[in-house]
Length: 132
Image 1: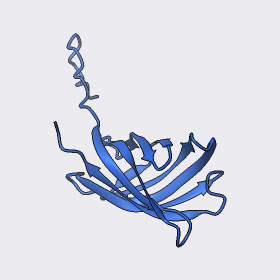
Image 2: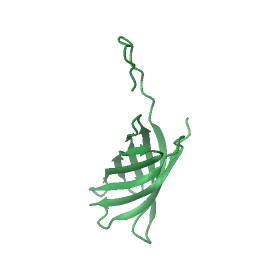
Image 3: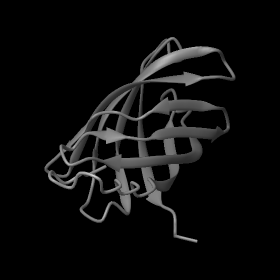
Image 4: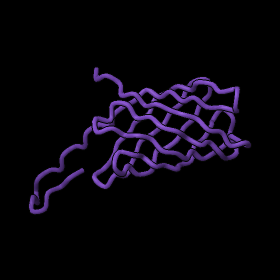
């Protein structure tokens, strides 16, 4: 939210809603990879800090709060996730290309923690949903 100095008494502007993306994640043990799908919100503030929420819903449930930073079109991240169906926690680490229009964000991810006793690599794509 931006508030201009010297505008005392003016009401603050309502922040724009976060963009919603369809998520496709290809991950799993080598030779046994599967596609995980869901949605995410994704926003980048003026300093490049990323916020949002990840909700994988198929074939299992994964929840996370996005974090990290975008610098010169690349998002570097490390944040925790929870697989609620399995009652475990883990960490997602990786990088992704974030174009200026933010319509398609894609990159690679390393999956670790209790949910992945053997760390796994994957690739993902966030595709901006059309406005309704």
